[in-house]
Length: 319
Ligand SMILES: [Mn+2]
Image (tube, rainbow, N blue to C red):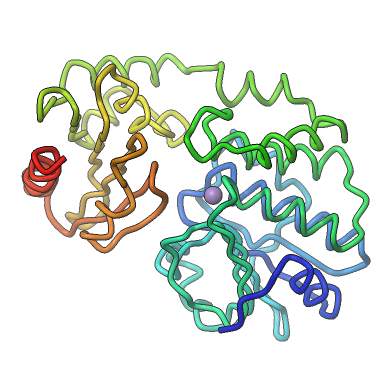
């Protein structure tokens, strides 16, 4: 594996053509914003570039990808993964490509190498920050669409500039996006100031059914699929529900468990500085960032909840 700088990656991209950009499963604003902006930048440089269709893109983010996607890579295409920490974070239908990905552009420090080339900077709050620098280094003249895609990536991965990962560079990139014409107010309203009734009802359910451990420093909630169905939440509504759990006064680490397919349970963990969510999830084969991470446990919801509770209690006592 060859680690590259932004300048080296810019040269690497400019020396090649026919790009297909891959996003991660349960795609968020960062993976999609990064892919959309890079795709547009490559096209501006005269390259053929597409974002590979990802079935899990939600209505909130779908407009970013309009006119950019294609269903399959073709012979000779260069595959680039953006914001994909490990090959097991790829959507199931991309799995057959996992050994053919040429470059990974990412900001996950806990990521696992799976490409011959990579541009990884764990100091970046969002992958989209790296993409913005990369576009400038490639000599791209950013337009409103690129700026909005990068703004969506940067703002969503920082919880609208509130998380501990937010730094001066994050604001620099966001300011550049605004100066380039990104409609910051409209995106902020859509992303952070709008709740469906279903999302608010789900939050109410979480409040009624959460468990507080270790004197209130640890919060845990196991959410059955039947409850999700009854309330009628979609994936946009579910976005950052673990962050909602973490927002309770006094809570330092929060875990939200959801039933996934085939009897496995998905765990999403959020924490404040001093409690490393990624380290917690790595114990279960997952990963992510210090403040936000995830893992899957091949057990029923109740069994997984008991196991997570056990480990979290030990953590709470050790700290
Ligand atoms: Mn990201």
